[in-house]
Picture 1 (cartoon, rainbow, N blue to C red):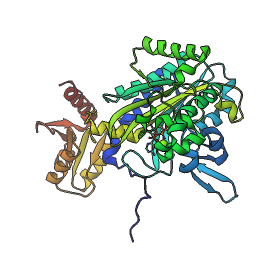
Picture 2: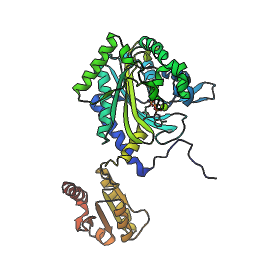
Picture 3: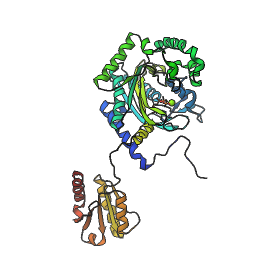
Picture 4: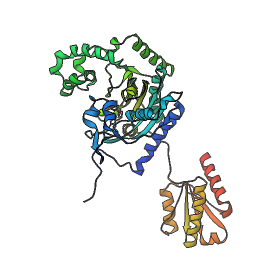
Length: 423
Ligand code: ATP
Ligand code: MG
């Protein structure tokens, strides 16, 4: 019986990987510009880290985690998100003792046991950033801007930023009572999820996709903010304006994770089935202390890369062209094949992508192969030419051929490719 991949996982095959590399390169380039440096943390951590760091009443911890007991009897979890592990590493390695704000980013797989659908997988990838060690609202705004720039720089259109403030835990506790007083008379009208959320995490009720019709006149958390929260929110907005980042305010936005304070935001776009969120984040001033570190504030975001790639496909975004080979080396006959190996090696050493024949095929078959690789130049090595210390250079598009000395081959190839680039 043949094996199949596990449910909710994907093989990213070479034909599609160009898009992934393009998206990842855009993320890395933006992080360079904004001064975020890469961190790579383990793919699994102790289960308790996520219970503490993500929150017991979140969907992730309640029903989506891949937990297992290892052979030593410890409970470990495949990481469902990147913030908890990054913050754990920040604390464990005392990155807080450095004088500057720790600006970190990661790109990698996350694991959640979810029902498979378009844009929802059990192994998926996130690009995320975390900035730890400053309360400055400029940092919230720059985090939001980096995410927005990411979507525009890969060429996506129509990605919107939604912004809210979820205040402090104290403000949320007071707001929770007001909200429950509003929701309680409507309890029976709401969906099952909302009814259970009312008991565990009522703020998330307002985020429900089905029940919006019942929420008219609901209290807004923005009216409950105290002066310092309101000031922070206003300043975040002013910094976004200074960068000309467009956004809309959505006072019902709460993120799925418990740890957010002040700023909460999401990136929304249409084109992935029923799903409209491609990323989100916020400020988490209590988290570092919650997992045993010093009282350092943080702000971050996470963007789903599968959803980004799906959007690029649904918008038919044109990606920069890449060819698989600059040069194809044709070797005709046994000694020419050996010479071809040497030529290919030298051209690769000069930085070119070089393909060749691996089967002693005839000239016609080898040139066909050169076309399949979209090589711009073919170097043809036959026994006669080699005996004269020569090779033939063929421009694949025009068919133009030229005989060159082997000693000048490398330089000639490079010159011709440059001329083609310039055309
Ligand atoms: P959703 O409401 O879609 O379940 P979420 O609130 O669980 O999203 P986050 O934890 O904020 O998502 O993760 C950030 C981003 O990671 C999401 O916006 C999405 O792009 C991506 N993401 C989350 N879960 C999955 C998944 N199971 N498969 C693919 N991408 C995902
Ligand atoms: Mg989710």
